[in-house]
Image 1 (cartoon, helix red, strand yellow):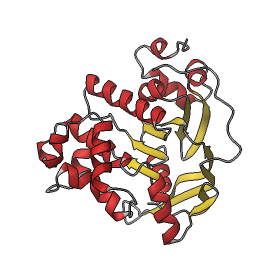
Image 2 (cartoon, rainbow, N blue to C red; image 1 turned 45 degrees about the vertical axis):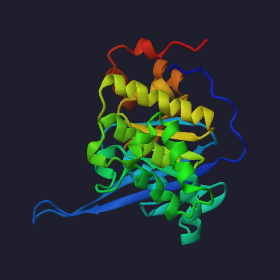
Image 3 (cartoon, rainbow, N blue to C red; image 1 turned 30 degrees about the vertical axis):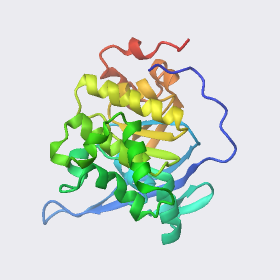
Length: 278
């Protein structure tokens, strides 16, 4: 999927706002004659994410992508700054605020085969967050609806994780995330373990779900070509900072930062992603 040159005008109030977010880790010395040091995983990151956006987050290993994603999932404490959802504090926040937030923002893991609990059926896996977060509707109806949206047959509801193919496991992980009917999805390398045909299918599925359900999507990847197929806006991380935040087409054709140019250089044929949509 190609992207347009310009981004639409952003609404005044973002759905998610990161305000000078910082996170550091104290790393021990490798040898007794050395001193430990502080690793700045995130440094004063400020970012607005708006309702219904499809945004890519790219960067090399160690750039801070995973830490930023964990912060957005409220799984990583902050050393500075704050995260707000619809103007409400998420980090730092109360237990009630986090419970409210997790109904609105759901996660698609990188490796569903290892993150989906063994011994549970597909139906139980999809229903679990609905029970945990006190879903107000009919749980079984929501489970069947989520499975249908990811184009899996209802006969899979009684299967266990070990019986699923890689593509099926990824679709179940997506079904589990959308069952709560969230406003935003945070997807961590959702196609990294799949072969090319399955990658394309999952990318198209995420695009369709985001567009038809008006769900925002943050797609985290080390591969900028994956983001280019789906996202109109792309963020580039390097050394714990966002070094570029631009329309994807503009980023691909006029990269400003050396890290962006390095990520683009890894794509065999960049021209395939630079054409403007009709």
